[in-house]
Length: 265
Ligand SMILES: C[S@@+](CC[C@H](N)C(=O)[O-])C[C@H]1O[C@@H](n2cnc3c(N)ncnc32)[C@H](O)[C@@H]1O
Image (cartoon, rainbow, N blue to C red):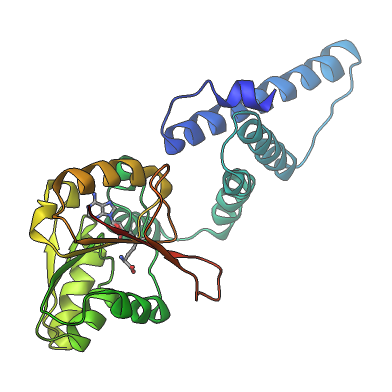
């Protein structure tokens, strides 16, 4: 049943999540109205229940619908937590400015996640060291981190390989701004651009590093295959490319995530 239903929605996860919360709200209202009708009109009993019961019902229905529509498992927790979080915040009487600030920060951090389906989460220094060991050692190279986040990887490589041109491109304004400020403060040679990597010409790079998401990998492979020069490297952290066996897989990560390396033919 889950498989049949999960094949139906062809929506972005965020859109589906909103629809699920709406469906859960509609279900909760229908159930409470039916109970009200039965108890008050038919049995003449005046039943009252705390608002938290409704919040919990909303959370449970939303998580259940998320299961039925085949959303990834973490969405069930988000659906469970969302109504409860709203209820808790409503009783805390937090000033409106706090919500505005939260909205602005979230928007600048996850600016285009809805469209790209690649959220922001940084890689760690242990990965940067592994990437350093993978890039060609015997000549200056031009490398870019596509979706450079806070810029840690690019700055690390730029420091270790000062003869190379190391760049990062980031589509979300806040991480990009932070990477720019960090590079200035650290006097890093890494160059950070604000923009969409899909508009770049990959032929200009010897090494391309990507830490994106499964949703982006197929298109990334097509672009890399079409544009990258023979002998250049595509390195992806954590995410594989379906039907494109990598040249090597490195697994020194304590979290069990891999680095995948493809060398262009
Ligand atoms: C998982 S984070 C990785 C950050 C960084 N590369 C690192 O290793 O710490 C992915 C980043 O890619 C950015 N991104 C997603 N799609 C993008 C695009 N089309 N062009 C540029 N950046 C993009 C996101 O905003 C996010 O900051």
